[in-house]
Image 1 (cartoon, rainbow, N blue to C red):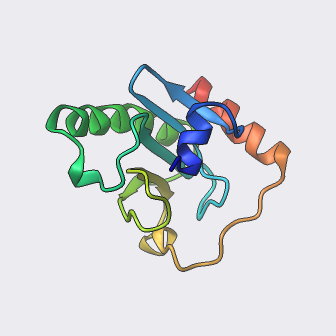
Image 2: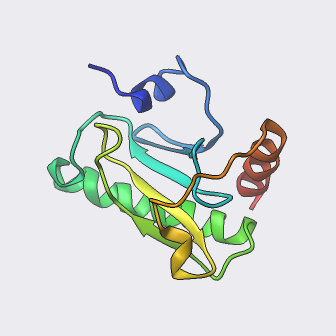
Length: 129
């Protein structure tokens, strides 16, 4: 069964895509815990990140590292935090979360509610970073 992320990859669902290549895609989380919260995923749907083959796993982290640099340049933060939880969507993914304090990466906190113009502005800043 296709995950919501697979539907983003196939463009059945729109997303604020930051970067993409043949194997990976990064896009803004529409339920962010911080402005600039970005998801990085492999295009091949695998539920559990540690079930990825070694090459895909390594290249996913390399891709995430590049996206993290863009997020860090575009968003006012001390650094970009990383989380892999894997319970919300059955598709391996990495959360990149701009941080100014440890509380900024608390996934049980209320999600931010951003309007379309805020997403568009954040999206442009990260792409242009």
